[in-house]
Image (cartoon, rainbow, N blue to C red; front, side, top):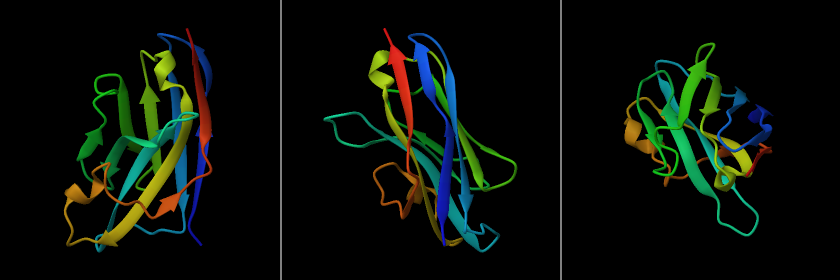
Length: 132
């Protein structure tokens, strides 16, 4: 059973920083099983959008233009924990943030991690609120 457990988030003033983390249970990434870990967000009344993604065990990352230079995605403690560090937060960053994952054969490329690709597993979400 695959389970993604998010933590972190909360409320902050504009210009502040927050981080969200996600632990992925039930997927064993290895030399033969590659994958991507990502963060998406959805604000009330808006479509879900990709924020950032990372190729598990590698250095390839993808970012939405709206967060480049402000957000950093990274892996922690090996391959099954991913953190999104959010700096210089803006009110428009307020949303429910969802962790997502996909796993596949190591023969695939990091291009699978692009934010407009399909992700198979999702967390329950954690709220980020930025006050102006």
